[in-house]
Image (spheres, rainbow, N blue to C red):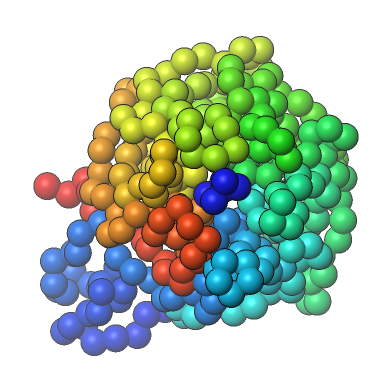
Length: 335
């Protein structure tokens, strides 16, 4: 949501709960539709950064209170272990931001810029947390180049590179794209997008091609985008691809079995429940089952072929939720 509003699972084999059914054995009841609910977040979250490390869903920062409660921004970092189905806390981030650009690689969690305070001041400070250490502590890493500060970028991780595509500065949506190389702790620029956008969805193909879909061309949701662009490896210009079926920004996205999944988001004055998948080999968008309710103001992450969508809001209001929706793309492929 932009600024104008802006499991080791242990259970009976004879009967599985809705969540357990994701791991049921073949003699269990038929699989549920592609949407299910996972363990609720321990506290509400809105406009957080979301990523995954191994079998853990990680949520960084964001609003943890509604407008009526004071619209607080939290530095807390929480993690869901899918093997146990339980949430726990990681060391607090050194900053309390919304729209942080978050990624993970190997055992390290990265926060690369974001928005500070409820005025959404763009920051370029960056930090890393090595969870493989006995006592992990956040450490500063190279900040974004001056004038390139942003939050709400489309984030793609392909070690040792983390790409930030578009995003929002304090005053406008951005077309510029950045490449952070954590092996050298350096930043470089990629060719800019054909038009500015924040809150876009993105993926990277095996051949190195980057794909960016949709987004918001303004600092609110009044101008959603549906165009899609590709930047082949070493290319100097983005190339057009088939547009999305529904223009929007802020969808929870991830790559599942080579398909870019875009779930929910926002357009105009409302949150969106529409789900689409993009097959890069055919350049075709396919409409999938809607989310159980509209959802905006959150990111997504993929583990084991499933897209996890923590928190967010059901309308374009500062009303963070504790829900965890799970989309199983494999279930959509069954006859």
